[in-house]
Amino acid sequence: MDLQQQAKIVSSIRTKMQESIGQRLFVRVNLGRSRINENTGTLVQAHPSVFICDLEYRRGRVAKQSFQYADILTGVVEVYQHHKPMFGPFNIEPDAPLVEPSKQPKVKKRLRPSKPLEQRIRLNSTQVAMLAERMKAEANRNGTTNRSSKNKEIVMELSKKFDEKRKAEEAKQDTEE
Image 1 (tube, rainbow, N blue to C red):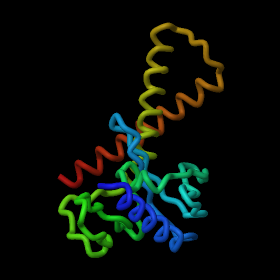
Image 2 (spheres, helix red, strand yellow):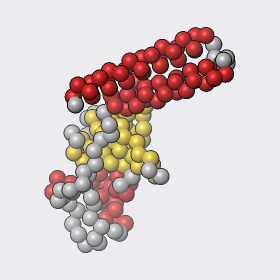
Image 3 (cartoon, rainbow, N blue to C red):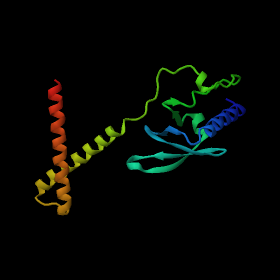
Image 4 (tube, rainbow, N blue to C red):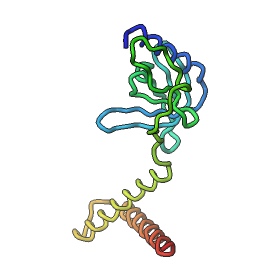
């Protein structure tokens, strides 16, 4: 792909992003080494070489993140609107005309957003509960612990909640079988 064609594509990406200011987007960023960030947010600004989104993270935290239009061209950043990709694969043939994403042939393998928030929270609470069980077992083994009595109470409460949750899930699975 020559430089002029890349400039045309980046220009078309820029105009489409400028038209989408204020709209909600789903942004998927490939950070390399199997690390992928997926966030939902609002497109706030579109500058000549970058666009800025307010991305929503866990627990209601919002952070500004800037992305380059060239990252969309290279596939490092993927932007979705209404669960549909805003930009399709770009033509790399030197003399091929530019094709809008809506006219691109459908790709069989579609990228899906990450797991719902409830599942992510559940995994984290499970990990916390497993840590609480380990701490409880270590405290029983040693007879003492360096934690304060308040931390011990919290650990015991977390482990009880985890045990109750696990028993409820096992009972639910037994009734389904």
